Length: 249
Ligand SMILES: Nc1ncnc2c1ncn2[C@@H]1O[C@H](COP(=O)(O)OP(=O)(O)O)[C@@H](O)[C@H]1O
Ligand SMILES: [Mg+2]
Image (cartoon, rainbow, N blue to C red; front, top):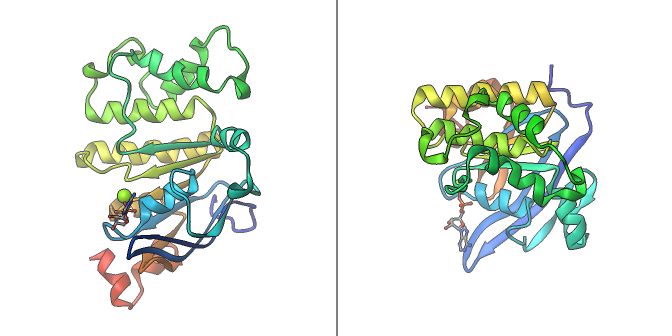
């Protein structure tokens, strides 16, 4: 199975602290993501899940602590090296919107043009666009405009736009929030099939217990600014700790 702890860690977060004013959000948070793993992070609304992800991709600067991605400590890197590392990290955020004035094809070509360093100048982007669209089951949407897509389709196209860069790591922040239950299930199946097809490693932030159950190789609960408890879904679900139980009711 993919939950093989002998595999190399691909992300290591150590003793992360982040305070906004008097609001101590992260207070010594630790996380290890192993290669090929789907790691679910659950926490109450406002507990700092998105802040943690933002620290990971450099959108927020931690007060203290270290973050290593693929054995590189990100706060020691120059901007160029950070940009290069970023091409290895895809993300799907709730707000990762498509460009409304661009077709699906153009939306997918956009990251390829931005990251010419990784790919060089690609003469014909069509095979890459089609491959990414096929991975999300939407090859026939290539010429549609975003306003012709349903909410679920938009999120799948956003995922295809991430996949086209062939990232080693995918970060999902609330990937099923705002979707109806059937579409949520489709997105969850898609996340699983992507892990299997590309052997990506993922951190999935969710408060959706069904999503966690379906996808987690391992879970971390973010409570009181720390990695309060870690384990498989079954292990956490069986915990007697009221703070932990509260998530599984
Ligand atoms: N840029 C910011 N400035 C001030 N407070 C922030 C900022 N970003 C997040 N916060 C606060 O940090 C806490 C955690 O936010 P967040 O990580 O978004 O929570 P969630 O776990 O729901 O994703 C919240 O109290 C939020 O108001
Ligand atoms: Mg959030």
